[in-house]
Length: 96
Image (cartoon, rainbow, N blue to C red; front, side):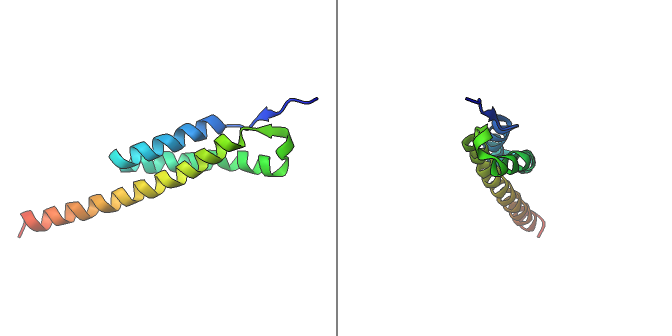
């Protein structure tokens, strides 16, 4: 009986995914960066699991972190766009 190895960075990707969503609302640029880092770190683990799924555990955690990183990137990007529109609207109101 062989023991399965935990996928590398699965916990880190999960935490980065959660943080990217949370920071995406309040500090859009930080959330965007954390999401990109989470996607980058998940690439190797996802590839390793797809090649030999019987050798590794923790794919659910890695996959959840990957999905949350994508959501965090989208939220961060949307909040940056929203902030630009708000700043432009304020500028047009204040400097007529």
